Image (cartoon, rainbow, N blue to C red; front, top):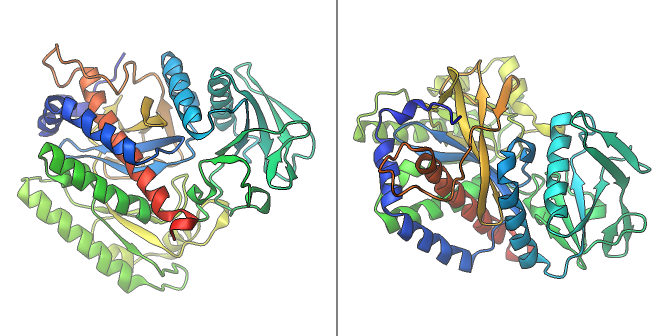
Length: 428
């Protein structure tokens, strides 16, 4: 059953969805032209927020870890999209090395790894798993509760190639976001295709670069179909030198929070929106919902207590936060069983392959849902995000609502492609 969405009944988003539906031939043509100029990442996922008056991405992940949460009915779509991606990056590929995160005890994540491997095997590839975990010194079998099995093997570096004992792959697929840095064993692999490229990892990547690219994409797209780009684009700013422990950079943080809030307040007045504007301050690098706080007025960032400063000062792998993104907060008016929900869109190559809802029973519509206590509703998307239903004349029909999600998800994917081009080592 498709979950009931509170925005289905009222609110101007229906008008935005109608605009997307009416312009869908134009949208598809515009996107097709963009993909002729830019190469999408091998895979990506995008967190969307739907406020009724705005539908916008708030985060884009280039190492998606939730393929196990997709509706199994979408598996053929995943396989087809993966085939397209492989033909683009490495058409002669017969074997592929998949390098996962070091979470050998996180069963949900390992199910994701098993699903990625299953998709790739169905494209005709011989897939094996190599681990960056120094504790994996010999082939290590892992049995999953759902009956699936994984075999993690230690990596073997030979010259400019990376593989396993007796396994020399054509391509390497990273499902490890390199938060701890780019290890030596992954550097200088100029004889193999590495997907995504290592500069997509959090050792190098910055969210501000992504949203700068998205800014351009949103403006160009909005001009093409005649909408206000703010309707699909969260305002943002960035502070480059922050130390939460030492209270360094508070003036920069306060000034940027104030500037972004002013932009949002002006837009709320323009559209007669009565909600309370807010911003989200988040680490400019990193994932897993760490280093994030919601701010509704400037005083809150100056009056942080020790616990709040400690929470903001480190992210995954214990890395210190020195750069932060100040991003317009987008309320989530979608609910599932009375809990706040946000859609997550999954893409392989330039194709939407499905999605699901992140749900949190303990968080409000203006809070981060990527936090302990969240859960996923994998079967919520029982129809795809790539085909609107023109015949039903109902923008609230599931295919039509999900089409809007799919459009914005693809815009974020396009921004990721441009971001990777701009930040490639040879482009710097």
